[in-house]
Length: 121
Image (tube, rainbow, N blue to C red; front, side, top):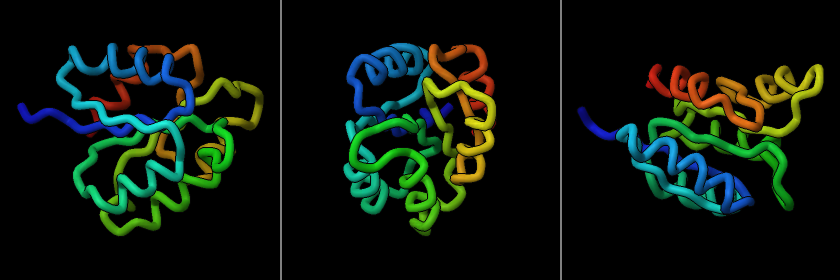
């Protein structure tokens, strides 16, 4: 089985560490960055990601701004995008999906739910 490549975009290293520590033992190759701007640069130069996990609340450019830009990159218009957010209020899931996310996972992350989503790639 080929390893699936996942890009983790989060401005908090602790979240990146926790997600990577969860996914790596399950044969996911994790690449991470601390900003949406950095993620866009990586994605414009790398065509081989199976999924993108993006924190919705980041300084400078948040996930709501970044997801439409990610989806405009021809090699990533069909890449699975999972919105990861501490925002769990009524309407937040819908806002993430309207922005272009394929799935929504709230923090603290339900690992089983995340793995179910990633099993679709």
